[in-house]
Structures are given as structure tokens and as C-alpha cells.
Image (cartoon, rainbow, N blue to C red; front, top):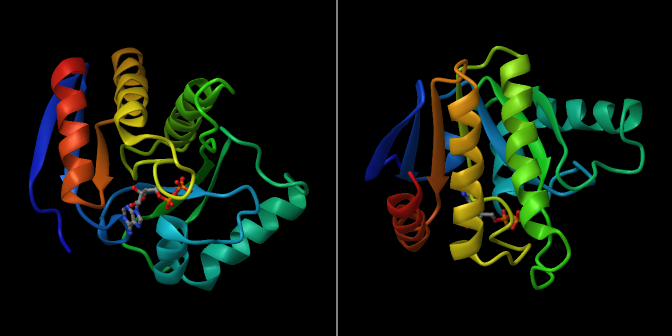
Length: 188
Ligand code: ADP
């Protein structure tokens, strides 16, 4: 599956792009992994990234766990590894919130996951970054709500930060792309 249909929005000096596709096929400075706190891989996009990225990505995750986060990466935080066998140079691993109905800080934690990922990219001088729709799979965050948090957070970031050229949302289904498009129309 390649980048098929898409949209592009200028925000500050950067661009936000919406595409349908498989994030493991994207050629970019960094792709973001919707990881779980173990950083040991899992289902969904996490499983796909580790499958394609290969043992190098997992080895680096293990080292990060041992050195920095022995109890696991907390929700909203982000860490970076190389891309292993992926086309992307780096993988930024972040943990989105599990949806519990919306009153347990989910929107702020989801925004933190996007912000910390973007800050990490900037600290490594990365220019292009691709996100999946964090938390809207196994973690159950309603995509209509999550898309608004995701787009608003990235927009506010690009308005303040001129060092990122392109932030791409790689949506896995036509429906997900449609939801993000609808949200973008109102917000960007
Ligand atoms: P979470 O646990 O954060 O909810 P999931 O991986 O279960 O993470 O789902 C997050 C989103 O990623 C879902 O919309 C899912 O359809 C999507 N997804 C799964 N595989 C891929 C992939 N290869 N590329 C892009 N998005 C993917």
C-alpha cells in the first residue's frame, strides 16, 4: 500500500499532510510508533514497525528500557531509536493513553505524546516526521476526538517551531483518512 490520496495544509513554515497508507513504507526522517510502555513490541502499528524494522530496533528499545525506563515508558513520553531496516531513518516510540471515557486526562496525555515526539525530532534536527493515529486502535480512543487533539497539537507546534518542514499523518484506512480530513477542514 503506497501513499494514495492525500491533503496538504501549510501551517507556519511547515506542512501538515494527510495520507492513507502503511507507515512502515514511508521514507522520512522519523516515523512515530504508537508503542506500549514495555517498548518490546505488540500488535497494530507497533507490531508492524518491529517486524519491518527488525532486531536493531528492538535491541535499542531494550537498552533504553534498561538504562532509562526500567519500569516502562510512561504514557505521553517519547524515546528514539534508529530505523533498522525501515525506510525511515529513526523511530520515535511514544505511548498514547488508553481511553477510559475521557475524564482521566486522555486528551492532555495524547497531546503530550504528539508534543514530546515532535520535541524529540527537533532536538535531533529531524525535518520530516510521520505519525500514525495514536491511541485509536487497541487503546480505544474515539478517532473523531483523537484526530482533533492530534491536528490541534501539531498545528500549535508548527506555529511556534520553524525547524520542522513536514508532519505527515499516515492513516491506515479510508475511513480514518476521512475522519482526519473532516477534522482538518475545521481546524487547519
Ligand atoms: P494504539 O494501541 O495506540 O491504539 P494501534 O496500533 O492499535 O495503537 O492503532 C493505532 C492506529 O494505527 C489504528 O488506527 C490502526 O489502524 C493504525 N495502524 C495499524 N497498523 C498500521 C500501519 N502499518 N501503518 C499505519 N497505521 C497503522
